[in-house]
Image 1 (cartoon, rainbow, N blue to C red):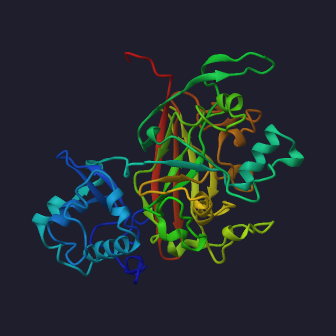
Image 2 (spheres, rainbow, N blue to C red):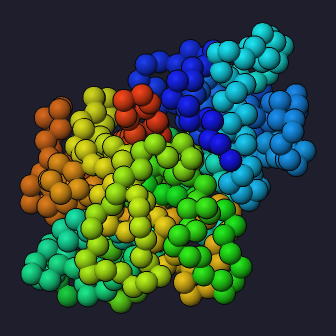
Image 3 (cartoon, rainbow, N blue to C red):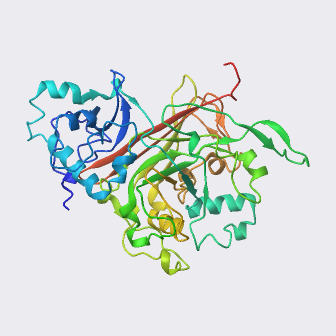
Length: 428
């Protein structure tokens, strides 16, 4: 089926700023509350939110097989379940409707008034009901840096790392959309030189620069997904800040891995950018040596050239960019992650979320966490206001941005922004 929505020559009759993350070639999907307190599924072009529920009620999706209430729900799960053919048909139709040469909606003021909103007049929500959340550990640079800090530098990677995408099951109940603040977690830590743990707030709260992909109903229990078919089951991607409490994690992670240090909060960007929209930005991933086992072997370009940035903004001052990285650095691709996840027959459902793991590049300014950027706190970062950071302070807002760009098109994710608050106190 043709992918006409990606036509780089297409222009919209809606005004789109030059460096917008959301040109008509993007057409991401999200959920928002309108100024009339209506929850709807929508898309975004420039600085406008498009109510797809209203578009459907006005019969603009005529000819596409959709349930009557497909876009009048509070999550995208049912739409995602319909599969890639439907996703593509809907994106193509939206591109046609908002093309500068199409007047069917453009010249109908009554319809425009109930379909098109200023982005500032809507409140973004979590776009999917996340049933299950898996976090991988797929950046070779990140895993090597952590291994150097906490283990033998000569054997930084554990023996299994180059043979499979390491992952763990996280907690979906504390995944929140951009703009929702998170509290500094409480837990047990083992102070340096001590033999007994203490209880209290984490002193080493960190961000983790990640991306995450969202799946459709991919298989039945017992059925593996072949690596060459995995992308058919990936709806799209979001920016993902997988908050981490390093001191809690250091004490608890042996022998079963992350627990309270990771499940207190994860923040995601509200617009899901489809894999279709990212097609022009495919690239080859890192060479894999040794060659993976047959079920993980793949040919062609399965990485994506997505430029990533992290900034810290203390209260009442300007932000400081502290990291510039790229999604293409990931050693294990999304296809390999999904194939490995299901090789044992694990079922994957619509709305499941898979985190990439911290994305670090080859240079110190591309490291995707404060743990690496400050090298465990030994090398504090200086911010524009003159203050220093080893980890994240209460009151700091962590902002992550991501976009792709070639000679004709820029496709972006907007941002995921979240403020760190002091520990939660009952009654406040």
